[in-house]
Image 1 (cartoon, rainbow, N blue to C red):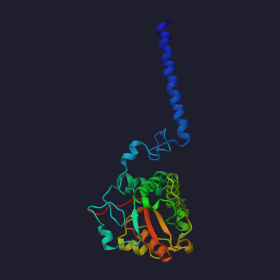
Image 2 (spheres, rainbow, N blue to C red):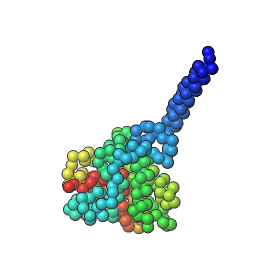
Image 3 (tube, rainbow, N blue to C red):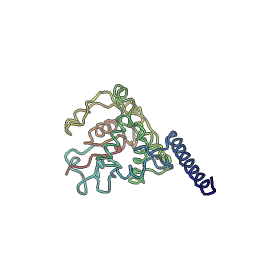
Image 4 (cartoon, one colour):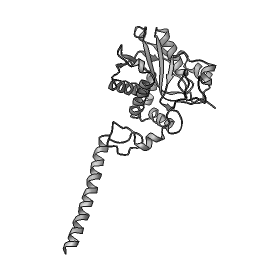
Length: 266
């Protein structure tokens, strides 16, 4: 074997070894969870970035034109049509994403077997909240974060409550930004099973959730500003009912924070 052939053979072996090493390293990283939460592609900056650029670009941000009351994306400036027809009882709503397309699919995956997506969504909710309400994140009493509860039966059927995952990540991200926050999963309880609301009208949704929630620890509500956490705002019926119970127990303000909100109808 002449010198040129030996060098070529050596180079080919080195290239093959290099490719095998990279493949091995990627598998090791993936085995430790260093992959995009959306599509599973390898991410070397995880968890600084939980989604790859492709998945991030697909999610639709809420933008600047939002309802001043419920926080949904609006057609024009001001209060949305739904709120004008039936003003929500919660103080104000807020959402980082529009419940459409890939954003809606992302939230639906969270609700149906992929709770790890709460990592990204909860963190984005927290960053959006700090940006929109900087005056609420200063030194003072810790922010009280309350996830919308499920019944025991509902939890058993799903295996988890996605709003608790969101609340946990929301609070962790706030604390990493220097904001004091505590999560209370037992303050609010769901005492009545409700029907699926996907095909219900606004009136039907309101009737469906009426009386379904109960404040278990009323003393913890008195004079407090509460951040109520849910996955989706559609008509606001759930947030409205929960807020009414919390106000009834003495809460000072109740903000309804969701991962995604259905936009105003055109």
